[in-house]
Length: 531
Image (tube, rainbow, N blue to C red):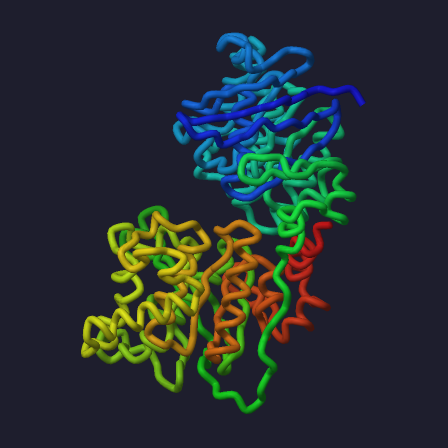
C-alpha cells in the first residue's frame, strides 16, 4: 500500500510544556487508521497541528503528505491544502458551523472559494452532497440554518462540507461523540460507505474502541502525548501489550447488582405520569390560547429499595423530563408517591422528600458552582437539612462523604479548600456524588452520570455507584442512552420514545429479547454490539 501521510518525530509544545512527544505514524492511500486515546492524550492536537490549526503551538518534526512536508509550508500553500486535499470533521458541529449562514450557503461558499465554481453550480453541488450524506429533502434542508437541524443532520452536513472538494485524506475528530447511539451507527456506516466510494484515506480520532473495531484497519494508541502501541486493529485489541491499551480494552463496565428481594420496601410508585408544556399556536387562534406539547405520556413504574430502574432512550424521548418530575422540579399529572408521600410543591412540606431523593447530573463541571470550595459544595445540603450541626460536625460529615467516593486529604492536600476546576472530570463527578450522599438519601436520580467522561473514568464511576448501592442499600433511577450502562447497573428498564414508554420489564428480558422495533434498534446500535 502506498503511503499518503507519514508523520515522523512530531512534537507539539505550548510555551515550555511539551504535550506531544516525538510521535510516529503513517496512513496509506485508501486506508482507515484510528488515533485512540482519552482526553488529554494528545490525539486531537496532533491532528490539528498537521494543518497548522493548533493556535499558539510550536510544532517540530516532519509530516510528509504526498511527499510534501506540511510543517514546512507557508500559510498560503497550507490554505490550498486545507479542505481541498485534507479535510476535517470537527467533534461538535454546532460550534464548527456558522450560525448566520444556511447549510447550503456554507458548502457552496467552500466550492466557490476552492474550485472557482459559479454560484449556481456550487449551490446545486451542495444539494447533491447533502443528498449523498442521507439528509432527507436536501433541497429544502440546504436553506436551513444549523440550529434548525438535528444533531445527526448537522454532523451529516459537516461531512458533506468536508467531502465537497473530494479530499485525499479526511481527519474525523470524534465524529459521533455528541450523537445518540442509533445515530452514531448511521454516521459510522455513512463514513465507511463514502470512504469506499471515494477511495480516500481516513484518520479517525476517538476514544471508543468499539468504533475502532467496526471501522478501522489499523490503530495508533496515545497516552499523555506518547504513542504507546500501534498495529492491526484485531491484533492490538485482541492482544494488547501496553498496560494503558489493556486498561482501555477492559473499560466496559461489568454487571454487578444486588439480588432482587420480593419483600423489599417500595420507595417510588409512579402511575400514569404526564408532563406537558405550553406551546404557541400559529395564526390568530394563538392570541386566545396556547397549545400543548406532551413531553411525557402515561409513564408507570416502581422502584424498590436497593433496586435500579434504568430509563433509556434518545435525545428528546422524555427521559430527563421524567427524572425532573420525580425530583419534584416539574408540575405533572398522575400519581407519584415517594415513600408513600407526594410532592406538595411547598418548601417546608417537601423538605423530607428533598433529603430522601438526591440527584447527580450529567456534566459535573456545570452542575458544581465554580465559586464554591469543596467544603461549601458538599456541605450545602447539610446546612439545609441538618441546620443544628456544629462546624466541626459538618466538616466531619463532608470528609466522610468524600472518603466514601474515594477522595481524601492524603490524595489532595487542602481538599476542603479546593475549587472544582482543580479536579479532573471523573473527580468532579465523585464530588457531585459526595454532595448527594452527604445528607444520607435513599434514592439517587442519576441523569446520564457517565456520558461526559472518558471510557476508563466511566468504568470507575460505575464501579463506585455499584459499590455504594451494595454498602448503603441505595435505589437508583438511572437515566441514560447507553445500553451498556443499563446492562451493568439495572434490574429493570423502561424504553422511552417520543414521551411514551414503549417497552419495560426485567433488564435481561427486554435487552435480551426486545419486542419493539425501537428497542431492537437501540440494542443493536449499542457499543456492546458495534464490533
